[in-house]
Image 1: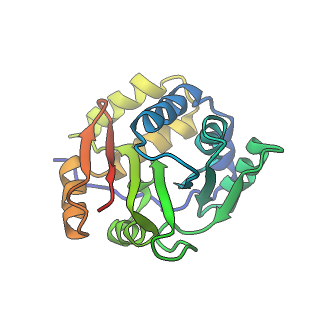
Image 2: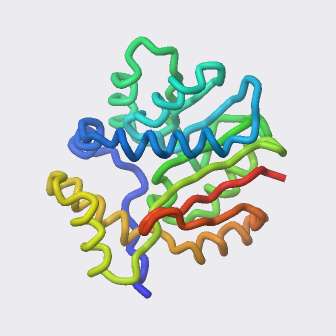
Length: 217
């Protein structure tokens, strides 16, 4: 099995942030939002956190689909949040600069937490899982999607060429590093068990993506 090669937790390089903000991820991001909305078991006026929101496209799409909910985009990168604010324009979205491992919310105050492609950035995932467990309400809903690590560097390069062959060299390099930094589904299950979240589902949904989801008990 390919050994994990962690990458930096925060993407605050202005060139990286700009590259992600101008690249068209609309198809994959809308599929993420559609999957989340179809899986969401809660109703009413909800407080939803989008952890590691990056340039904010998913947060914005969530807002368009669920205007009745309070949706907050959270990222540890000022450069990413500057692009997120531009993305949202005049929409009444809230953006918070914060480390996902140390959130500015009181215990059991959040109804829903979602995240796309954050986990593989985290050097030690235990503080992230424990912080999620702290702020989310009992009966709340968690939905995370991330990459999972391929079996070899060769397989990682094949995935990059298959799904990002037309992207810039910068984005292809970032994608390759992200694949090598990702956790395996088995590693994620071990993390959840260590944090008392073993009841959450861990499911491979594509040849490179894993979903972690469920209702908090």
